[in-house]
Image (cartoon, rainbow, N blue to C red):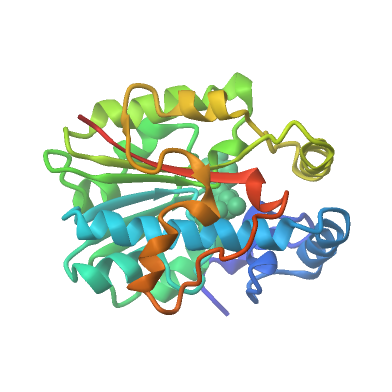
Length: 272
Ligand code: SAM
């Protein structure tokens, strides 16, 4: 058994495990698959959203690594899957340091098992809503040099932070902690002002008590005064898809985006 797995509550669905199920992973329980199957039935685009998001993240990490950044903090990292942030980053820059943060104990358990031999990567169980506790965590201090540019990743996690928990202040906190030249990647559920958005938000809120589909303006506001890089905040499938020419395994969206694919967007910004 994976060490730490006994801390995992198997009677309640978890965001990390349902997302793992939608991505085709195996680190989930019956209770997660019931929810995942309901998502697939009631929200037929949920699998497409999960894949579009993950592929956008992979392309962004590659871009950030190619820009010379060798330190990553991945907030709300999720369960290990194919092409994890440390694998993509360390493929391009072998010395890259990565700290994964997630509040779900299953991420810690599986992450530690995966990373046993990786001296440049850590996984920390912590709550993204308490960024100071993450900044001051010994594994973060030991792995990240805050005098050098850092990539701060909020991939598909800020939409699990409700408005009264002030997601903007979380990003702002990290903005203040890192030097000029640091990168910020955010992907987020985007409101289409359509029945699909209303339905999706209702299903997520009913299941987890969380899940906010924010407008373009609200998502843009999360970046504060960071410099948003080309092509701006766009559906994840359209975020630098041309890169796929250099990455044969990753297929960009060749087709007209479905209404569902338009409900997840991504953006990359740089601290001036
Ligand atoms: N970042 C990965 C990606 O984009 O593929 C995983 C995204 S998954 C949809 C959201 C993750 O955020 C889950 O693993 C969940 O446990 C985590 N999460 C949600 N709220 C969190 C919080 N307050 N603190 C830390 N992690 C959180």
